[in-house]
Image (cartoon, rainbow, N blue to C red):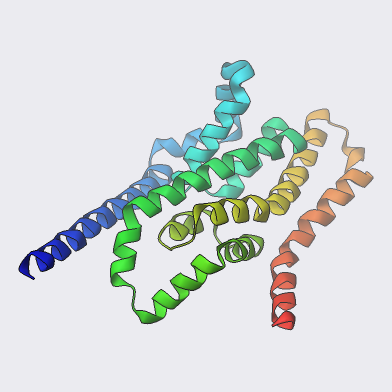
Length: 233
């Protein structure tokens, strides 16, 4: 009995240490990106020069930079805008999506490895019920939260603390961010093309009107989804 209790204490102690490491990583990441010169690297000019130096490897480099940025709590909208501005609407969408998926997966595993045991140890009966429900309905839960634009990076780490299966998280994320990512990259990429060409008359073109309409509509998507869900229930 005493040995079992000692093992339990050791397990809880290990979980607490890992959770402390996770908290330190999150705080450190936010500090580095917001209060040190590192933040200057996430600009169109700096990142553009860096990718130019990478040559044909630029898309792969960008994907890894995007993933690193996600893990460091760099706002996803900033990274997505940079991708669209540098690579254009269509290639930007592709590279941003791959970068977001890599970053989301890495963040999930960091949260799962360092924080899951501690989260499970402090979860009461009510939280365990929600945890079990997320495990049963992982794909639908993740997809819904992505579609209503739940904060991207916070959700990546947070889902790692739950019992959701990685495959449900991965496919729910992949599908859930696709529309929003395309809308934003298409909008920014289109404006960038006009800015670069200097053909300001194109601001009244059908392509621009379409991109602006998509961008505006994207702000109403979460409310539409919530309303549909309430009516179904």
